[in-house]
Length: 109
Length: 112
Image (cartoon, rainbow over all chains, first blue to last red):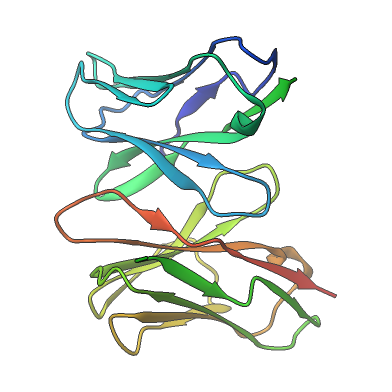
């Protein structure tokens, strides 16, 4: 089936550092969504992107819809301990969300 | 607050004993989804409802069934749970005019 390549798989950073993660695919997507999942909870929608080249912010989070429509990026600035969790990208393809494998973020205080 | 609610949050069942998980939503969304998520993996779509129209994924085992008696409620029935069905089960909803899916907190299923 369709796959999204999400990287990095995991990150261990110091509090205050900026974080970048991305998703790439061989398919073109019309929508990109970024979710965060805390342990034992459901994913929470962070940012939705609808247009190629779109750059959208939500607090310290910024996400971009790649120009080729085959990739998307999420940046977190000035990380804090509560940013810990698993971040998933999801691309919309034929009406369904295709999820990346997730980036596990750990933040050291 | 409008939300997606899943009950129970934790469910323990025995191998082969039928189990039902429930999802309710106060968002009045037309579309409801059931996902299975195993440890350290992405959610995997099992099926979804567009209003009352049921759409099964091709690789969803026959062991998994679903019911949607009304807009607000959706149930996942696992007829004969196996050890491999132990997972987090996530319900999600969206309105017709948007592709943003909103997830419930999930039900963690343990099969003994």
